[in-house]
Length: 275
Image (cartoon, rainbow, N blue to C red):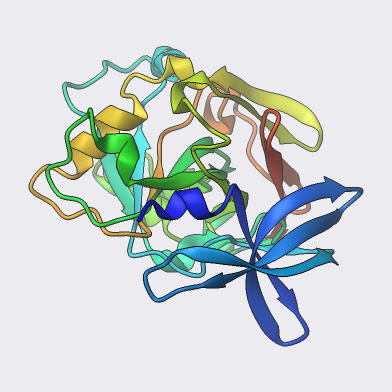
């Protein structure tokens, strides 16, 4: 079954002490009209016939097997970083506990505050297990798309302190907010024809089209599934464009608000709180 065909804009929300899935119908002035969905054991969704208005959306994923992240996947970002594009994608991971909701506050450990940075990214959510997936079939394995922020503690990422590894700097709790929905292929027909922007305190700091990607979504799924099972529910953060704080020498501070907006679809808005 094509699970993505059973919804258009998948969200999670709470009502009382219960958490539900819904199909987002409308959002106006911070309120969201949703059609409640029931989830079958196979993972498909069915409308229950109940519609309701809610004030807060949760992370559309309760958990994930892994967050696969791609570095240096935008041509303009490679240019600003003055780095040579490698033969294969740069891949690192984040754990499930890095997930956060679209409007959650990001609490930052004291040791991660010195060079805290944002990275707005298109996120791909895998809808079924796959291994050795061809580029031609790759999008058939996609549940949907979301927008996210690969929050990064650069003081743990710089080569002289990290040995060139990225994982630790990016794996703190809540360092991967995403949402507000998972948009199905009915909504996102071509993942390489999207535009999005990142704002810090209302200032646009990143703006790109996904056409600037070096490796497309199809190519990333093919690469990540080579000899490796890509599990259902996996999140692929597909890389960030130019404009990160590191190359602007302007890092996030306590109280800053970071918004990543997928044009025409929705935004995540997360405030930064230093512990």
